[in-house]
Image (cartoon, rainbow, N blue to C red; front, side, top):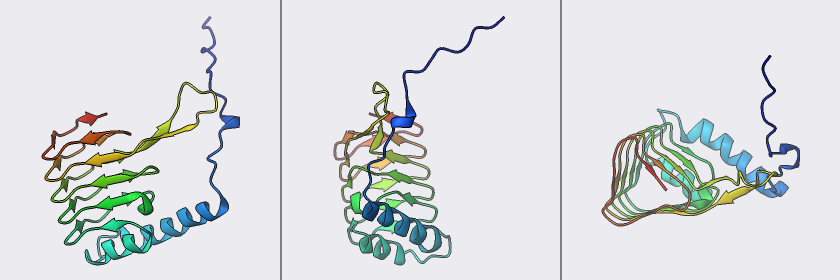
Length: 163
């Protein structure tokens, strides 16, 4: 006879995202614009920086943002000049993400500036900003976690995890 699994210390009934209605509406509005205008393959590249700026992002000159890029909160995104963002990049940016000039973020990279505090029973959010220095290259399928600070000229190898 097998024993029951150990009881988790988490009590997700007490989890609260803590977003005001106005904040929730902002996320919904961006979600609609992102799905219809920002992510599709046929969207002109010049339109994507303009859409991001309309939702509060700071986007430098000559940025190239490919299709199927996901940005959770454009108002928490800052991109320097001449940034290239590849297809399938995911910005989970409930805390700010700042990217310096002349940075290449290759396909399917994930930059995640937020998570949860597993030590708390209410699984409360834990956020920490990410900074990517100028002239850096985040190669395919790299993962950048909350609080990471990459200096200028960084090379993050394929599949690497940076804390």
